[in-house]
Image 1 (cartoon, helix red, strand yellow):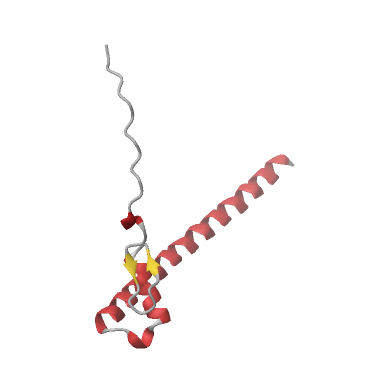
Image 2 (tube, helix red, strand yellow):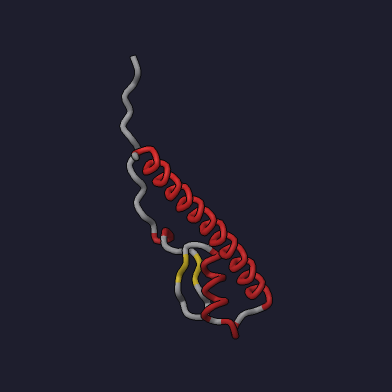
Length: 93
C-alpha cells in the first residue's frame, strides 16, 4: 500500500528574493545583469568604465538580435494568417 505524504510547505520569500542587481549610480534594482548593463549604458553613459561599456554593447547586441528574431517571427505569423484566411475565403466561394 503506497504511503501518503503531505506536500512540502511553500518556501517563504526571503529578504534576498528581490532584484539581485543594483545600479551603483542611481540605486535602481534589476532582475537580470543584462538589464542592468542596458540601463547603465542608456542612463549613465558618461560614468561607465571600459568593462561596463563592453557589457552594455554586448547586452545591446543581444537585445537587437532578439528583437530581429521577434520581428521575423511576427512577420511569419502575419503571412501565415493572411494566407490562411485567403485559402479559407477561396474554398468558401
